Figure 1 (cartoon, rainbow, N blue to C red):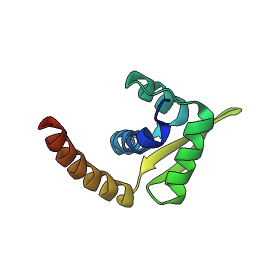
Figure 2 (figure 1 turned 90 degrees about the horizontal axis):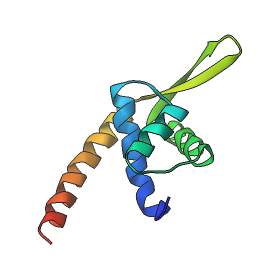
Figure 3 (figure 1 turned 90 degrees about the vertical axis):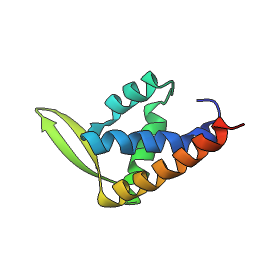
Figure 4 (figure 1 turned 135 degrees about the horizontal axis):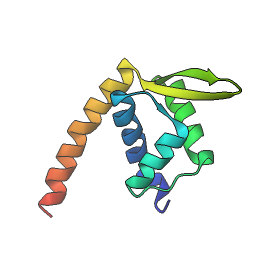
Amino acid sequence: MDHHDLLSGLVRLHILHHAAQHPVYGQWMIDELGRHGYRLSPGTLYPMLSKMERDGYLSSTTERDGRTSRKFYAITDLGREGLAVAKIQLKELKGEAGTS
């Protein structure tokens, strides 16, 4: 992903947005972000999800199906609060960028 440092905040917001709609798992999130033009490897996304969980924005549960297990991430109250604040800031940025 070009401009990785600049765009990583937007990736986090995408994650929170989708986790607010339904629990998400890593490969689904990689595919969804790909539809938005982001190309993330598991080596980039999974540490990001782990950090967002450590920071309190996401919680996770592991579901097992036979030998396979999948970790699902859901938004927390702190994540909802952060997403709401970010949406306000994005609207402000959009307003300023639209007038340039």
